[in-house]
Length: 349
Ligand SMILES: Nc1nc2c(ncn2[C@@H]2O[C@H](COP(=O)(O)OP(=O)(O)OP(=O)(O)O)[C@@H](O)[C@H]2O)c(=O)[nH]1
Ligand SMILES: [Mg+2]
Image (cartoon, rainbow, N blue to C red; front, top):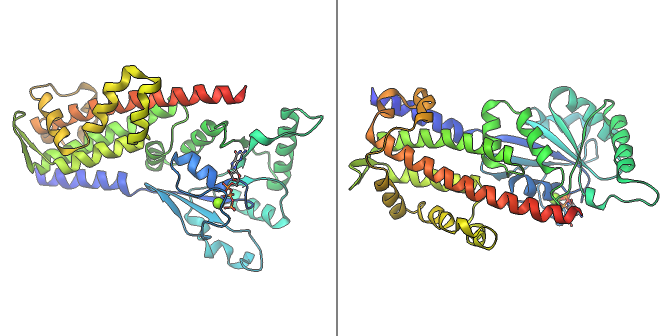
């Protein structure tokens, strides 16, 4: 019985972990594709300012988010006839068309074809540099919008972004997650960088489910006895889960160590986040939760892990500890986000 559930839990965990979101990027050299990949993941995964640092068709990956630089359509090297097969265009979840200037006729053909099959978001990056004597920013944006309508032969929204000031990234990332089907949406929420409190809350929900499932697996595996808490858990599973949550919230140790400069009240929280991912720290944390009640809000995860496991002391202790770790990460990430928003407000002025 427990073994059946163990399999089910493992399946759920694998589903969360093995899901990918595949994003195709299409756009002129220097339009800001690499910079956007970094902005969306919050990690320096692609080197900006380096021409052709991505091999066409070869994905750059950040924890299941795959980004593929697509070369120009219908060129001598990549003719129209073979393009869709060569780059497996059907395997993408969505496309970002990052443009900067004029389009070729072939680009227009490409988009009219792709738009019929897949979601495609048009991004005008480097909006911080948009300036022309005698025109307001709004007028210039309208002109760009008109160009795009012609290119796509449809009235399509344009996302105006800046990787310098972070303008428009919240809207772009939010639209991406709304396009995706539920499992992929969870992946995007879990691994993409948050530019709004709303997104951060979405991230918290996904991480909570991940904690419930990992706690279930850890309780089933019961490899390591925790003296003082009177349970046995799988410390390896838990430590991986905590570390993953820390990363999902973009909390590397450097960021956490800087937190005291603008959010001194979270100094203790930052230290705990670092401490509790270690196996020794985790054992200490688990002891604190001995004898606690099951978490009320966690009843909704019973279908994933099974009634027997959900009622076990091992699960109750670990899910309580995980929930506390999640709350710490959320608090710290919220402070980091507020700090970034504050800095960028200054940049816009
Ligand atoms: N001002 C400003 N500069 C940007 C922005 N985004 C990117 N850049 C700069 O524009 C240059 C090109 O950016 P990349 O991200 O390398 O562009 P890319 O599309 O990946 O270029 P290729 O890989 O050569 O096709 C770099 O020097 C970036 O720092 C932005 O939003 N604002
Ligand atoms: Mg690039």
